[in-house]
Image (cartoon, rainbow, N blue to C red; front, side, top):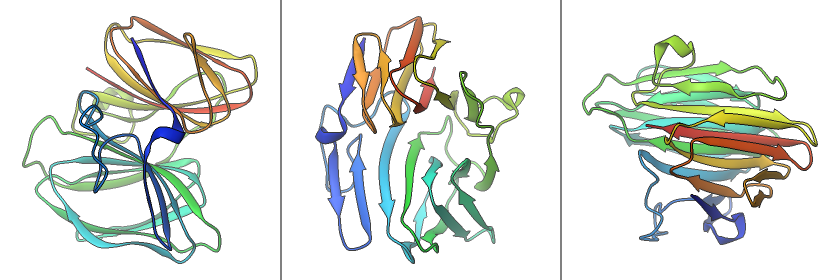
Length: 228
């Protein structure tokens, strides 16, 4: 089953430095039909203006993955970590027993990113942070973050994966879900998923599908979370 979530219908928030679109209920936006999709709790589509950002604030018991679409974000946290994550990289923060962090756009142009929150498989775990580049190969999914160490990707504390793919026009990729749930967003371009066509920043919640085939109608960048 495919549940289409068009970008134009997402929850929104805007102020002088942040333009946010919410695929799921978040902050003051609440839709009882869109609280989560399995263990996927948050998918925020954020544009952060230059020399602004999220000041220090706290989280606990959440896996937070940041996929930078353009620009860069600079991270600081209470564990002493500091790092810059730019387009083509992903950062993973396991909030665990508690962590305070800030995310700033110190660049001279806006930063666009997806902020993805996944519920952990257990509470009270040790907090951690990591950033890593990922290969921009065309025509296949790359694992950006995973709950399985053998995937050799940044680790999250859940039986889930975050995957990304870039497809040329007319190119397709098939992914076996075996009944696992998934959530797919077109970061850019247009991609056909079953009978649906996702435009830029549209999403689709997937349930009870064995195989998922995605075909690009133009050059397309896809991000997907799959979960047990």
